[in-house]
Length: 149
Image 1 (cartoon, rainbow, N blue to C red):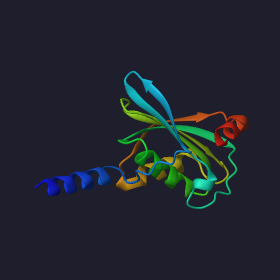
Image 2: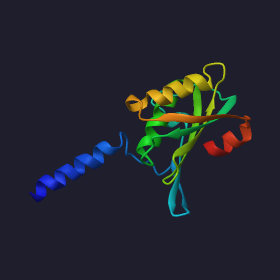
Image 3: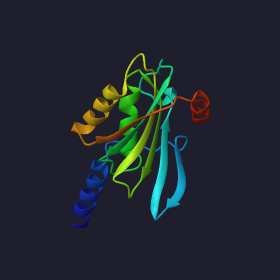
Image 4: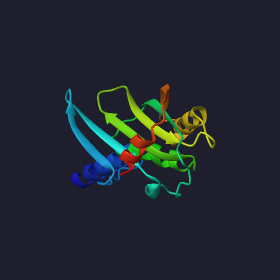
């Protein structure tokens, strides 16, 4: 009976997020804020499934609902956006108590736009995520370079 419960627990944990792998070089715990864990998850072309040839010239911030885990959900979004070939860098901030999480995407505006990126995010994991807000941000190459270090 104990073995069955243990196996069920492991399966439940394993299936709760599609990608639970944490790369210490890309996760940056910022501490606690109002009792919630805050984690920044970032990616660079070297971590993308395909090496990105995108050169970012635009920035957009999405507010995404439906994220239930720090690394798996953020990792799934990063992976999907990197696969577009139009995204150079993704910065995901996760705070457990918020209904929506902030995701800042540095992308090539000649290859994609916020509407296409929104559609891509909302298609992940059979529609697990919803974009509830989109805000165009001024592009700052210096900020991007600092994030990529």
